[in-house]
Image (cartoon, rainbow, N blue to C red):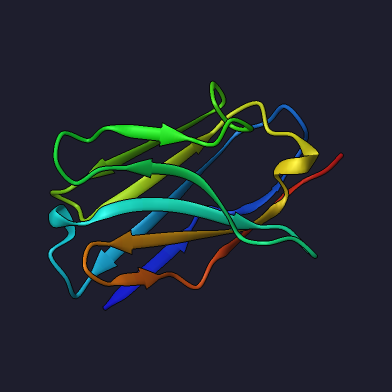
Length: 114
């Protein structure tokens, strides 16, 4: 099983980034996919979720209206479009796949700074 995140980097406040998470080794379409983040000195927190059936989404209040999670089951990939980024969005972002078990990616750093 592999979850490989990409797309992180340094961006100025107000900018945008698109994170990708490429999955392999399991039946992607059957898993709930999520993005979490962890800032220095803080606990890991849930950012966004997309379900396996119907593709319903849910977001943390802190990112509602700015972030969009989506999935492409044909490509075994989940995305996180992040707009209007703020310095407080700075964190390592992790991809998570969950059904009966949970899998994690290695994380990708997002830094929002001028």
